Image 1: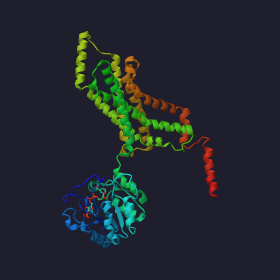
Image 2: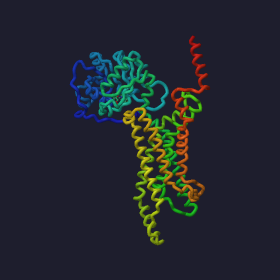
Image 3: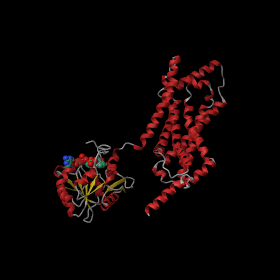
Image 4: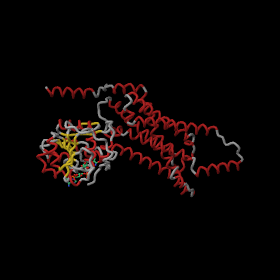
Length: 488
Ligand code: NAP
């Protein structure tokens, strides 16, 4: 069966986490199954002072030293009897769900126990009941709790005791859930109750999801990159070749990529701030903040962090590529050729003051823009973001974010300098790519400026503090009155 379980730890009986000496008062936990998960969980349980009994179909078959010292190995029936004797209630099913029916003969011994289902889904969006719900149907006299399935056997064995890993737990019996939550905390994990057993499908599928929140932003980045790359290749490589047989194919691996990357970074950065502006305009237009945004805008707002991080990635790659430009063999040849041409033309001093200013301003604004973007990326890390209060976070994400957008736009403008006004910039009727990449950022900056004007910012602030325009009030009041009269 295909599984998402990340790793198979090699348990070294000489060097697992150190076991704590047993005492009769320690709680006993039973684990059915003797595979990877069972071994790691039993190690962790032993280190945290729990007594552990493992039930296997054939305990004789297990090689000595497979489980840490102090773990009792018995048959499945024997393990459950030992658990009953010790008045323990927790039974972890470290088996694949298709093997659950093999436990039906043990139903009387499992009755009244808490069955912890640690299994994961084998594929996404399966029809019917989840593994945990099917287990609950099979054992109606037991209480089924879903949990621990998000932890790999490796994490169980090695995870730090810093509550950074969470165990999500769900189940229909509150007291059973509390027992599992308490055990998770005892093992050093953060424990979160996510509701009834109906939430189990989401928990089972969670380990199978592949960057769900990154899909849209990644697709946007790839589409933008493909567009700019192909556009530049068409303008600077294909058209000159068809037009005058000029061979610029060597541009494709480095120069074209390095021209596309900043364009993507700039557009992505403006996409971070665009939905906020649209939301403000919508609130101003509706005269209330109590109406839901359309779904697409909601989703766009939720993707801002990912868009920003991908923008940072493109900008950082552009910086590395740009540094490497000068060490290319081609640039060595170009400098030599230019020097030769200069000598031939008898030019002694090639210093052009405006070009010096242009390149220094261009480089400086780019470096500063990247630096600020780096701060933004760092504050998006949960550990850093959590250390900031609301005002600090808004200052960094909004204030510094716009600063980085302004610096990036300045970087592109200094790069373009007067080039946008020269006819050769529009060869083959195609505008230069830096001009295209400026359209969206400039719209965002102009939009932001307009929203800062008192005629917009004053009503917007009032709306955000709960004020509503007249056309919204009667409707709400009617609804409220209707509810009151209806109740009466
Ligand atoms: P595993 O190493 O294959 O162990 C499964 C155990 O099930 C075997 O050791 C065996 O124990 C028992 N078993 C095998 N065939 C059986 C059968 N026909 N009937 C009854 N029992 C049978 O698997 P695992 O990695 O420990 O995973 C066990 C469960 O934990 C799965 O549901 C998995 O989704 C979940 N999980 C695993 C991980 C992980 O990282 N490994 C992480 C999260 C969740 P005996 O021979 O001793 O009976």
